[in-house]
Length: 214
Image (cartoon, rainbow, N blue to C red):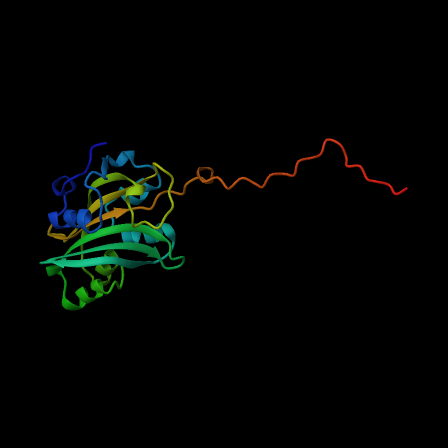
């Protein structure tokens, strides 16, 4: 699989690519591009579409989502942040995301809501009644062991799947770019076998003899 190892290959701003490598500590050659028809289920269903991930994941998991901001920074007119999306009902992490937002498209109150983590960006755009399109620019696989932020125990060689996505106004003017990674699929329990049971006491070959009083 070819590596997705530059901003131009991924179709994202250099600021987002640098933030991924330097602040989020994602190795430059960690992402391996995939055609959408090579995404396994359920990743194909959740990634290979032109909808925003907030509504897609909320529908799939049957729960509204909240955002947990891991870090955020402002670089000129680009706002960057690293997040988890979690379900509200079980607090389950359903996406690891890193996003770059073009700040000039938002009012002061809208910026405050974004900075305060009042909701995932896709949900806030609907709340703000900002019309937008969603267009994936790249799909990829990544070794889960390289995603040090993920709060999961994974077996060696387990892959996560994700995409880079651009949100834009109907005119085509970009609003934001996002790297969106799904957590690893459930791992069969056999990969993590339980500890062996305690040894069974050894049976004696002859029953013990009992002394009889004289």
